[in-house]
Length: 219
Image (cartoon, rainbow, N blue to C red; front, side, top):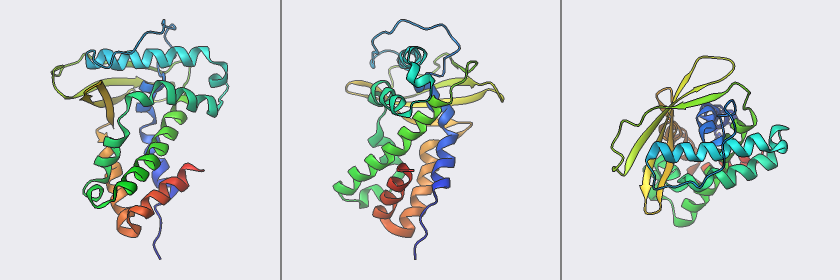
């Protein structure tokens, strides 16, 4: 009998990146509200990330339902302001590693959908836990803005605990930048999930992994 990967395994590791997700979920709540502005995915990488954060900030500060912890409304804002700028397919494909090529197209899409639900829960949970003194400082961009794959670095501070370094890996697509990986304190999200996915696939196959993710997403 195969032992499914426990909910705590997925949730515990997902929470590790909750602070990182706050960049895209309005961690700048301690700053004055900014006028909403269009996000230009073709801008410099750090400007692109800053614009996404600024718009999410304004939404959080002005939405009473979010401030009261309404998860349905939080999920709506994540869907509107965060998801268009995340490449879930690439995150899932790299997390699955060599097993991705062994999956059928139907399994690949089902896995993307299931993992998308896991990451949405992470973003939404992070946004729901924003406190009044939380803030993020995006570091000056040191890379080559003309490259197709770059890292934007930041420092996140919250009410309790030291500042945490969070990096965002972006890929340039035909329509501009998209985030596909997050690094919190030198641990990349994709690498961490690759190990968990491999364990679950070894136990119960691709379908078992999809089932485990979907089960966790319902809780």
